[in-house]
Length: 84
Image (cartoon, rainbow, N blue to C red):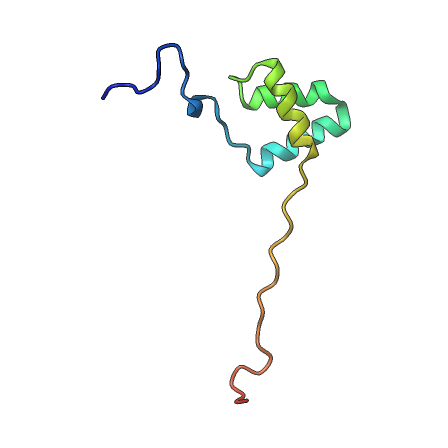
């Protein structure tokens, strides 16, 4: 199958990565407890293909994230068999 990208172009999917909540928590902890450089080092250990400038921008972004809220409790009817 021929490549549709012009020569010299890198496909965007090769530079994407996914950060799990565990990764984000470790990076946030390093950022808040030890500083930005420690967060950059933590991020680069977990994602070795990232250069320093990208890691710095990503670490700052991740440090600003808040964990997702807990899922709401499901609604349970008080009287499931009662007719209205």
